[in-house]
Amino acid sequence: MRGYRGRASPPGARRITSAPRATTAYLATLSGSEQRNTQRDYRSTLRALTTEFAPPGTHVLLAELDDEAGVDRLTTWFTLQWSGRAPATFNRHLDALRSAATFWMDQGWLTTNPTRRLGPVLV
Image 1 (cartoon, rainbow, N blue to C red):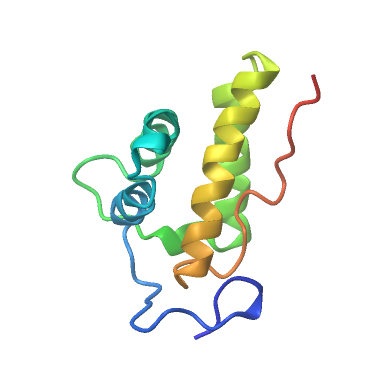
Image 2: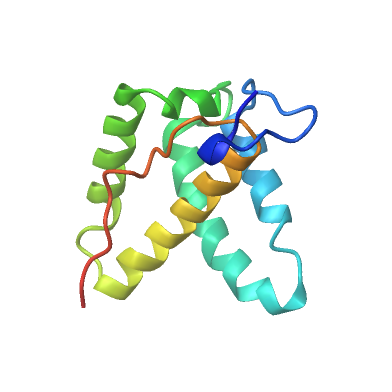
């Protein structure tokens, strides 16, 4: 299976991964003491994402963000969620989502970047 940018996915990578599991796996990579604040900030962004896309009691696969309908839904949700905030806040949330999406692509859980339609707000 090919992952992000055509690189081979890690052994055992699967596309059948739930959104909450993928989020937990990504946040575990931010475990160093110097990353404590980043993990806290990114966790709040990704918690909002999983609350919207995979509410408790549902089983939503991360791969649902891999098609155009998923990208449309993510773009609309993200814009409504954070467009009224300060540019630095909007951009921090975007950085969190983009970083997680890159990790998920590297794992082979996504084949495209679902944040591709989102751009930073210029300050």
